[in-house]
Length: 184
Image (cartoon, rainbow, N blue to C red):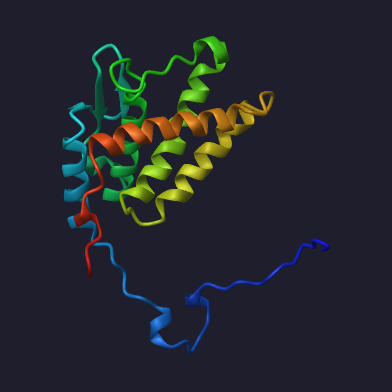
């Protein structure tokens, strides 16, 4: 049996006039309810969070996440995606998943940790039912880090495996709340 490559032209339903209504399902995401559900999910992680003025980061020495106020973000989704990113960073603590990248990656350890956090945040957002718009931001960020890691062909797979370990811990600690999927 011969294998061959075949291409298809695919259109978004919004690009086609006259489609029946069942091709345009009503959105199932209510941002306000989802934000509350995401907050409840985060609270079950028992990861301390503090308010910062203008930077989001995980502070290993204090084992806490610093987040700017929600108003500093373009949307609730952007805040949640950033918090997810920082949650993945927080799993590097020895009492959680524990991750020491310095032995394998030396000076590139920071880059790999950022890659792990972004892959993890993208998957976590999908797991928690965030609208798919957050994926574009994650993919752009991941692409920039991939350029730095071109010399290690397995670095991305390593980072993805580490992200999966982080996600396993996060999901075990706080399963996705059912209320994230809110009917409109």
